Image (cartoon, rainbow, N blue to C red; front, side, top):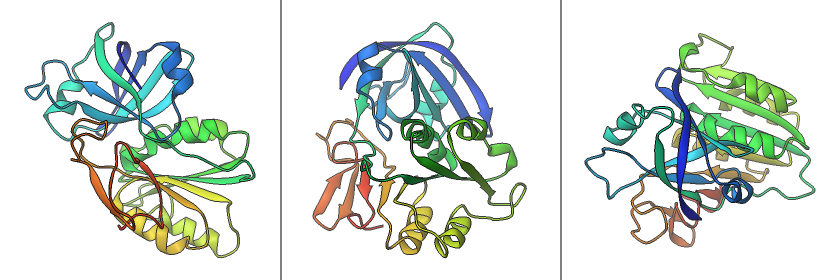
Length: 251
């Protein structure tokens, strides 16, 4: 992890309440980053500058780092006003990221809502395997980046809560159907807790890794703001995670 200045290349709305920011960073950050990790941004003009905003890495490309974020408060609202050419103070990369065994050939990627964003990094990182993606969105106008998953995945299944696209309401439904006849070597997921609970119940005999989402303070394990309950006591999502084995965490 290092503190650095990132120069913003673009920052735009790509779907309902989904903004994509691309920034230029130092090459050693690109080389060090792993899928599932995140960055911590000091939002310009924020009234609460002591607290940075944690946002998962969407993908890395040469000297560029992309994030996709939703407006959920004052900090992310202010982030939407950042313009091309501006510089941001960031800490990157943070967290532990996804780890997949070398012999895991069939990888299923699962993303829900804004949790779809970091799964693109995972899909690209493991593109030498047989990767399938299951992406769940609230509605058709909230869909983003499915075409980028198409570039690296064998198959991409999209669901919407209101059935404006696809034949399933929840992203876990097609997964449950597929698990009746086949078994991936590993499942990687990021999304809301109800999605995690359904996945954990459906995929009990499959290695399942969950990228947890929690409000954070320092982002480096010092303040214990972002703890989650596990079989081995409370763990820090920013430092011990954000990626955990499903059987380890209590959802």
